[in-house]
Amino acid sequence: MGQGAPGGPKAPQSDREARQLFEKLDLQPWDSRGLIRAVLLKQSELAKKSDLRKVPVKDGFNKILDKKRKDAARGKLAKEISKPVFVDLCVDLLKDHNIPGSVADQDVRGAGDFRRDVSAW
Image 1 (spheres, one colour):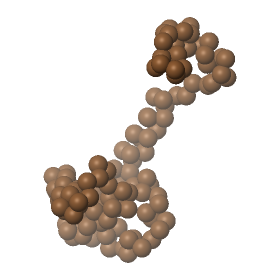
Image 2 (cartoon, one colour; image 1 turned 30 degrees about the vertical axis):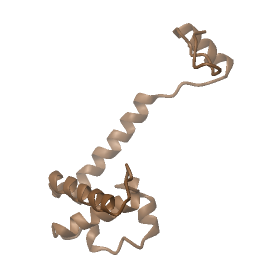
Image 3 (cartoon, helix red, strand yellow; image 1 turned 30 degrees about the horizontal axis):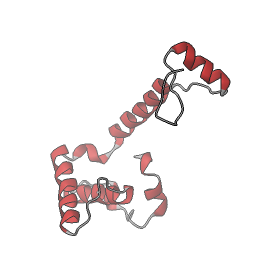
């Protein structure tokens, strides 16, 4: 097998070596294409229903950038925003655009289940 990092495991250099390693460790390959396709399908279905589709993308980017700038001014230099913060920003966007019947009309900020299942959007 091929050379890996010094002191670390060696990487397989051919399909034959990879198959041998899979058999030796009893590993099963996973269908990455199928998993990605399923996620993209779910996202496309959610996008058709989401009230956020009514919000211009530029407004969404500006809202997120504004939040990042305010955080940076306070000394918070995070590369990412948390899911709860993202949900809050999305709800604010819906309110800013007065989209009736949207999730912004509900009191979701205190709903723990809603925040935990952000992936349901």
